[in-house]
Length: 197
Image (tube, rainbow, N blue to C red; front, side, top):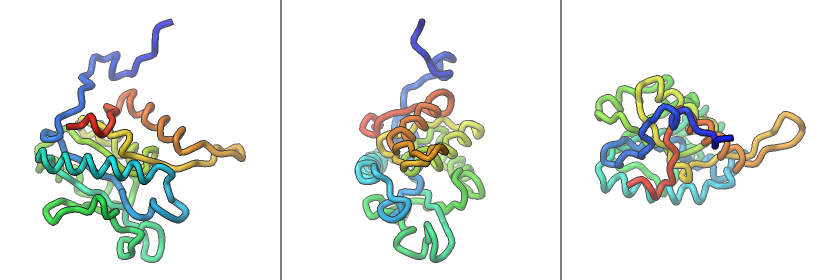
């Protein structure tokens, strides 16, 4: 039996990650909400550190940089008027960096992200952020439909434990890895953050 291959491999797709200077870095929902409380992610700290290093390199290389922030209701999860909804300090946007607020998992839905990427002229996007199985996945899947080539900085993403529907739970690590494997089949190149230069 031969080793399994992704659809991207079977089609002969170029799986080389883009140079950061030729890409747009899209940082998804790296907000304080994920550091404490009911949505605290076990891998948030290491993912934030890798995303911060990636952001620093992207700034040096002249990437288009877009910060996505989920906007919830006042007083609730992702309240953008409160500290819990703020982008984490380590990834604070610079004055000239675009911040797009969204209300749905897919960062293209109900936002001008597609238009902003069009204005930037970048067809390669690099995604990092939270949560791997939810907003990162939804955005990567939508990006394919829009003709974009997506790379995910795997170790600059994280997610949380989820109930398995049978009275147990699946670990955040399992959910993270499974989401990345699914995306690697057709939707995205999967790379480690330090490999993106």
